[in-house]
Length: 271
Image (cartoon, rainbow, N blue to C red; front, side, top):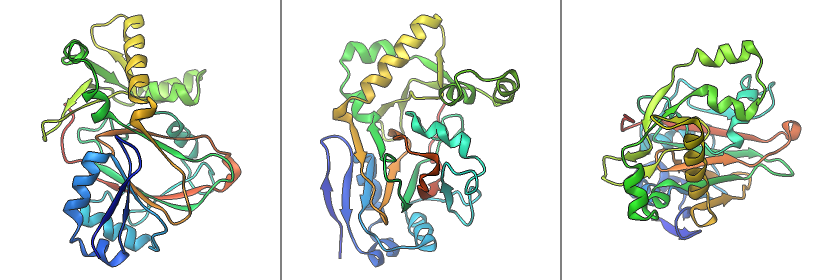
């Protein structure tokens, strides 16, 4: 059995129908990577796989980051009894790119639904390639050479708007990183890099910086560039971390929502 692909929106999100043996064989790995690069998000409904199979499938697509979690599986939960970093994970409710502070941001990630919340908990993705490509040429030229400083501190204001002095000092220990606003990829395509860690535009006033970053975030997250995934238990979803932003929609801390994530290591530098 090969791959049957069903596009969900014009710019982002595709469902792939394939059986587990086909995916684990690796025979369709290159095709999956190509679809992922174009569509940003792909998913498989009701795929009957376990943790070991999830990691094995991930390894056919790229290099897994096994140091996060246990044997390549990281548990996404807002319950501190399940995940000690649950408070930090509340930042996932806001538009962001994983690893924007790393030299090589994650290439992609696989997410599998184990238990769902009764209300909320859907995940949204926006295609930042398509958003850039839809800009007018004068808009592209105006931002082409701009650089944005990203920081962990900035992302925490979304979670805790009024941080204590101790909290502020803790997050300011994390290094910042200057990144291009327009990320030119090795393929030659370009995407916008904004989101919760984007702190300020170098050389801009505070007011100009905030306005531009908010404008571009709003541009990227317009309905035509967004796919919202309505989870079903057993779903396996893969998103391109270098070509999308994502966020989870709010859900109760005590809902029991649990997702198992496997990360694929970055393959191209962000500099």
